[in-house]
Image (cartoon, rainbow, N blue to C red):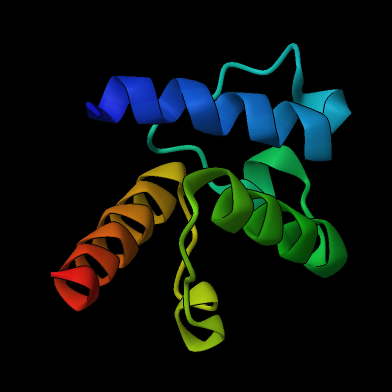
Length: 88
């Protein structure tokens, strides 16, 4: 899955968790809490939905380092790689 395809999937999840963002121009560099107004509870909801959608587990200690959409995509890719390695 390309970064652009992953971004499109993330946008769907973001819009479900933060419906007020549907009119926002969300890019790879969008800062989730500042630009999208995600508080700690909505961020937790967003991350759990992302984990479910991509069938991965992102360690909670990694969550605190996720600021931008790009950071989230990188965390998804890392979790997918670790899962694939564990299943090999």
